[in-house]
Image (tube, rainbow, N blue to C red; front, side, top):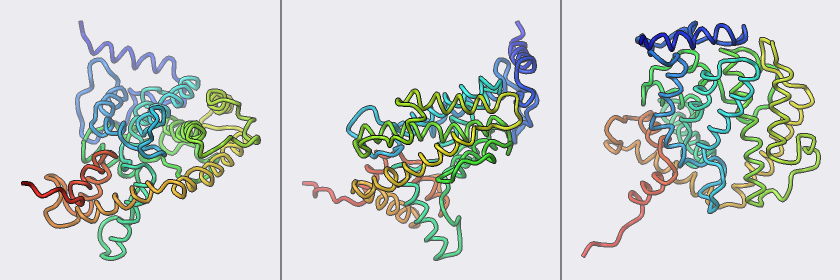
Length: 341
C-alpha cells in the first residue's frame, strides 16, 4: 500500500470541502528548512503533533493562568487555557469550513513562551529585561510572550513548522486591547484570526469561572447576563455570534453589540480580577520578586545552564521554568540550608 495516498486523499478532501477562504495544506508556503512530506499526515497535522509532543507544551501544565498555586483542583492552568482555546477555535473554524488542523496547531503553540506565575511573571520579566536594556542599551527592550513562543518553537526546540503556523502563533496576542473589526481581518490566514478571537473568548469565560470559584468575584454584574447565565451559555453565545457573522466571508466578524459587551467584560475583569488579585494576594508580589531575582542571578557569568548564554539565555531559561521549578530553583539558590554534621 502506498501510504502517501492517505495524505493526498486528505489534501483532496480539503480542496473539495473547505471554504474558498480557507488555507489548504497542499498550498502551504512550506517550511524554512525543506523536508519530505509525511506519508500520512498533512503539513499542518505534522505541525500540530510536533507542538503537542514538545517539552515546552508539556510544561504548560505547571504554569499559572491567573491564580497562583491554588489549593483547589479545578482552577485553570496555562495548559487547560490552551486546550480551551483550541476547542473554541476548532468549533468556530469547523463551522466556517476553515482548516481545523492549522487552527489547532496555532492554538496549541500560542502560549508556549509564557513565564511561570502567569501574567505576574510576565510583568516581572518584562520589567527586568527593560531595566537591563535601559542600563546597558543591549538586548531586547522587554519581554513579549508571543515573541518568546516563536523563539521556543524555532530556536530552543526547532520544530521547523510551516510558515502559516509560525505567523499565526506570532500574531495571536491582544493583551488588554479592545477587540475591533481589524482582529478578524486576514493578517496571515483566517485560521490565525479565529485563534486570536478564540483566545479572548476562552480566557474571558474561564477566568469568570475561576474568579467566582475563588470568591474574588461575588457575582457577575447583571449587564453581562445578555451573554448567558452559565459558563456554557456564555461561550455558546460568543461562538455562535462569530459563526453567524463570518459564514462565507473573507474575514472573521462578530456583531457590534456582542463585541461591545465582550470589551466591557474584558475591562471589568481587568479592574476587578487581574488588577485586584495582586492587591489581595501577597503571593503575587513574591512571585514577581522571584522571577526578577532569577533573571538577574542568571545574568551573572557562568551561572546559566549549558546551551544558554547572556541576556537572551537568561530570558530563555527563566521564562521556560514551571512555577514549581522556579520555586525550587530559588530555594536552592537563596534559602540557606542547615550546616551538615
